[in-house]
Length: 271
Figure 1: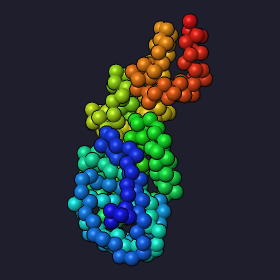
Figure 2 (figure 1 turned 30 degrees about the vertical axis):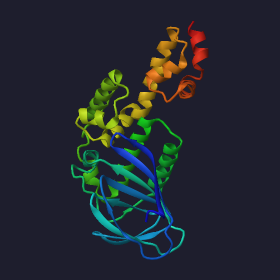
Figure 3 (figure 1 turned 135 degrees about the horizontal axis):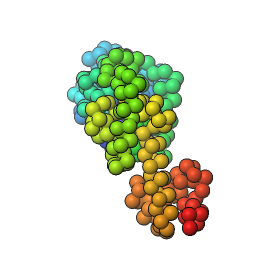
């Protein structure tokens, strides 16, 4: 298996890991493999294979995702040559339990993936590969996992969601209050502090404000940058590092996208 299976980690933070997995197994019976560590949700991007596990036999292709639980054994047989490509989303137990009604055990049977879920997982992988904002990637990964799991048991994914409009507004306001003081606080930590699942916090926040938590963070960064530029800050590299941007180029791109002007032009306008 080591010669035909490779995985490249494209995101690993805040209890979430995303791997780009390539298998080049020729047609035929595969080997048994044990999955240690975290729980995983695996999206098939290309090819097909037969997975035999405690949940039975399942033929998997790009219309399906499947789950892996720690210690679970499975065998992967390949009806065709040229293998397959998958995206694995690994979640730590606490984060998964918050998404899945308090139980970290994932379903044994495959999960159909809607066209929307399939496209989002591919867009997420592309965003991870190009190094998009880390908070945005974590939020999107959590939302993707919840969306993929929901058809299997909508009630479990919906458990704990604030029931009234007043409660949802209060939750969004509480999140904004925390982010005003700690704009870089990770989504799972923020949700834990507010006693709600990251998925529900993300959904409620977007419904109440019209934008995602990661977009809100970026806007707070831009406002902080504008304040510093208005005070005469000239070192854009230092400004980017201190405010949580990936680098000076990232700062310039985001400020221009939000305001229509470059940091240098805005500094001159403030002066």
